[in-house]
Length: 275
Image 1 (cartoon, rainbow, N blue to C red):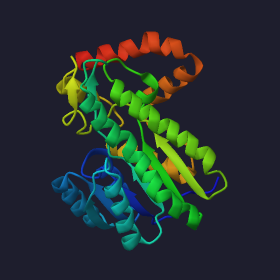
Image 2 (image 1 turned 180 degrees about the vertical axis):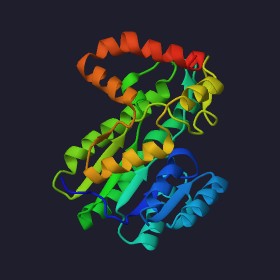
Image 3 (image 1 turned 90 degrees about the horizontal axis):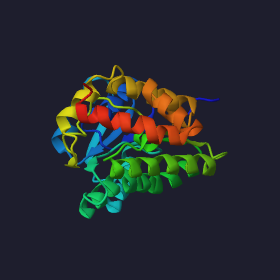
Image 4 (image 1 turned 90 degrees about the vertical axis):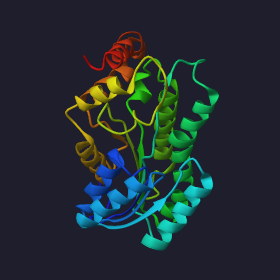
């Protein structure tokens, strides 16, 4: 299978102010990429910009709220002006909401759907026509193993990430023969700022989740490297963690086993903060 990305890609990344978005930016900077980075956290975005330039990348940073179709449309226009053709779009921006269905306010459902799902939809909607016209390009959609595990008290997060997986799988069928590829990234826990910005109505505190994330041996820079490797290979799925590979395999082979046994175990570990 041919490599999907050029050695020095022209790339657009949402949610680039910290965590995985920053790690992806730095990995691409090491390839002398030309980047357009976006986030609503302008201070964090400026720090990422400075780090990318220090690492050898060319970069333009611009504020973008991915829950706004108009903002994502402007991001596309900015990217065309800055980069010309876009080789790689990374739909990375994401947030979390915890709690039980019925307890979570509908406003929080709307908030997470706007960022985690509609943000990805808007990105694909605005950037895909250009990629199809140039007959090249790749989209990396950041989902989560939560799309497969369906852990308790995580319904809004699970639903949005499952939607991103489904959208990516659909795109894989639609894009066959167009020269455009898609990869969906499904990591397990690793350290990001997502728990600190989450809206929680749950018994699981951010401290417990942060502790669990910090114990995972594969962290953001390795997740970024493995994700870009999957894009280079034209792979549809990227499971950077052993736990994610196991969960996805069980879900496909014995879904009720996962939901009745493994999902409650994961929920218990989250409550305990990984012991």
